[in-house]
Image (cartoon, rainbow, N blue to C red; front, side, top):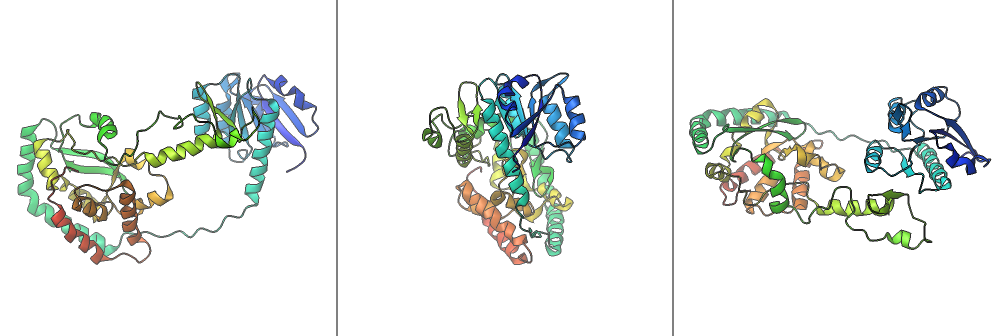
Length: 401
């Protein structure tokens, strides 16, 4: 790190840094608005980091931050946002946009802000010197034999099931009003329209959020309020430091503050206790006909159309609703999406064979196990056949899972 730090400050609170301006190790360039700041940045004069007030003439600090990040040639400099009073909405927006840090100047010494900037600059330089290992991309592909089998089975099954399907469609329509089929967005290797016979009353989606909290078989704990830690216990690291000091930058909520380390630690613990999957036990939204077609898996027949379109396969990992797929971001979980989505598969066979009793962790393991079949030359046509044969006795079940 070079001995002199050159900081660009944009705003009207430069007096806040007066005590540091005489420091030979820190040079401040003070500008009043974002237009002058943009012109200065374009000039490519020496600059180590940017400090910006949120409220600026004609716009705000996040507008300037967006411009800098959109122009990648200027976007490597650490950017710190300042506010005279804590604003929860601005705080959330700042970190969603990945601003390097956010400070309230009335409660943070100027020296602490500069020390934080020095830390950001040092780590930026260190990151440049680290050579990342070359990544070997693993190839996952759909075997031709699997695709040909899917087309043959799907077209044959639809042909023979057509008369029976007409009877089921009539029964669904007579029991409850609404369309006899159901279309939703699902996520497999891509997002697609997922077809199913309607087994629930109309308006069932409106009840899902409430039921997911009360009857989701995967839930192991209740979820705390958004953006709040699991508890307000003091950070064990901060407790060892002198009063008024913290182990990491403080984050401010409406009624209290918490250090960055302790907040992230508690959010990580929270994610372990909240399920990404939703499976409603004894779902009251299901109709009488719906219960029959679910227990016999007849409601899945329209997915044969998805198979013919190439959206799905006969055997694969179950495609997920968008709201579930959005929660699956970790590498060890998201591998499941590398396998084609299927009507039946390893997880479905195991789950139904046990009457619907399976933990979320075991479901993730089984999804990943099947995905490994498409890594390199691991695919086995006979493994798919084995799963199909195991599906037949699992089609008839007592539980509506």
